[in-house]
Each structure stands twice: as structure tokens, then as C-alpha cells.
Length: 377
Image (tube, rainbow, N blue to C red; front, side, top):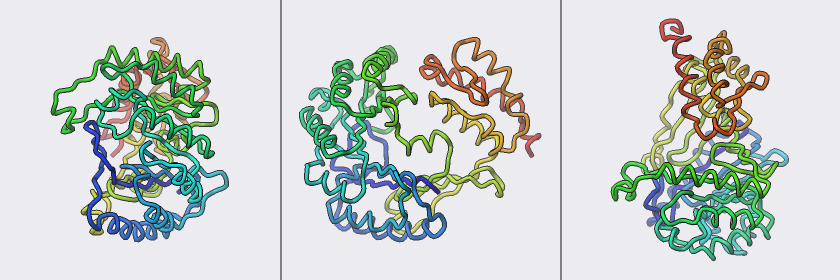
């Protein structure tokens, strides 16, 4: 195991669009979380000792933890880090100060993922964010001055948003990475209950602006929603998109382990929510069958401009004739200008990144036709 995700569920505020597993602080709650985390980390380390190439603290808002809580959290992780390891921490601008940044550097964090979302105060207010545009600017500048690799999260295509202005502000700050998303209105969130609906035309225009503005700043769209200067790609997230192994710690965290000697190709483990996780309930386990593994591999790999390695998927899954089974569908998608071949890899072009579902569905249909359940049984 070379990659580890750690979920910190605590947030100072819960945004009206958020459907992640997040909670507010409560009496003794962080203490119980840290106690359970120490036990879970020790158990996972005994089975998967590393060393780690990437460590990602997500949330929630990990930077919302107090200094002594962050120190205890890091002390709970027995893994060593490989040379040049990427250690990312998600942070909200309002939780950072020069002193806090210095503390994070001392703990070993070298990359910050900042939940900016917008630099425009009216947009931030509509999103329920606690910070202002000036606070976001100051946080990014201070993080860069402190020596962190910095990624900025932006939500694009919002009503009343000057998308180009947000993108140009992020680019001008000199960050190495921008994650540019459109707003997902998830069921049960306040936005969904209020009847808010995305505008596909406005979102398409926003992504076109992102390609233009960030491209001029030297950032490459290496994944559907992620742009980076060369060498600044999110190495931890690449592990997900490349279907590698990763461990998961904390409530609602998931893990993915390849199991070539088992009944399936891989195993997914998903932790329960905070109360049950803190009480010691084990993760739910799901065996990933060969066909499902290939379908997931195509779905994740085609999110990347580098594409997906069909030969590696064939080796992992044991499905004979995979390239032959996909060949007719690949030919049609090439003719439609959605994907291209590059040796053993299938790569989406710009249109394919914009229309991922249109590129993926024919490949899934070809797989299901070539490998029916009775043949795989």
C-alpha cells in the first residue's frame, strides 16, 4: 500500500451543497475520533506497512482541528514516507494563519488543497462559505510564501458568477493546480430542497473559459475537472484514477485493494459513519468481479488525458481478448472524435473529456456483450 486517505469529518460550517460525511464539533467528539483513529491506524499498518508515496487528509476540514489535535492525529500514523512523498491537507481559507501554516509544515504537510470555490463575495455568500474573497486571496498568498504546493478548488457556472474573473484570479496567484468543478446538486441537501437546478449551457461555457484561461497560464487539463502546471498534478488522486491500491482511515473512508489470489480482482472497504465507526464497527467489504473492475478502470482512466492502459486492465482482470472485444466500439468512438489509441492505451481527446459519458457507454456495452455472466461463471 503506497497511498493512504484519512477522513477528518469536522467542519466549522456545513455548506448547503455539501453531501460529504461531515459533522460539527461536539463535547468529547474529537477525542473519541482520535482514539478510534489510533486503533484503526495501528491495525491497518500491521497489514499494510507502506512506506507511503502519498498521504491525503480530506474532510470535512482537517485544518479545523486544533494544533494539539493535529499533532495527535499525525502521531497516530505509524507509516514512514517514501522520499519525495506528497502529503496533502484540505483546508478552508478561514482556518489558516501564518502560525498555523508553520505548524503544518513542521508536521510534514507539503501540499494544501484550499476550498476557495470563488473569490467573489456574493457568490461565496450564496454558497454558504464562511470566508470572504479577500480572505481567500490572503490564504493562498500566505500558503505559497510558506513554501506549500497549492491547489485551489473553484466551483464554476454559478448564477451571478464572473467565471473568467475567478479563473484569472487563481491563475494570477501562481498556484500550480486548480480543481474546477460545476455545482452538483445532491439529493437531500438544502440546495436540492430549495429546487436549485444546474444550467448545462452555463456550465459548458464555464469549462470552455477554464480551458482558455488556465491554458494561457500554462496549466494542462490532465483530468476532466483538474488543471495543473507540469509536475503539479495531484499524485494522490492519480492513484484513484489509475485504479491503484489505497488505504482508508476514518469514518466513511473507503479503501481499494487488489486481490489477484482471491475470488475477485479487487476488494473495496467502506467505513461506517462516525458514531458506528467510533464504536468499532468494521468496514463493509465488497468483492470486485473481473468485469466490474474493467468497467471501473475504463470509467476512471478515461477521466485522464493520459487515458487507460488496456494491457494492465487485462492482466489485472484476467479477461482474455479484452482489446479485441472493445475494438469495434473503439473504432466508432475514434471516428466520432472522442478517443484515440496510443499503443496499448485509450485516451480521450478534448471532446472526449467534455463528453465522458458518450465515450464510456459504448465501451461498457461492448464489454457486457463480450463477457456475459454465464461465460464468466
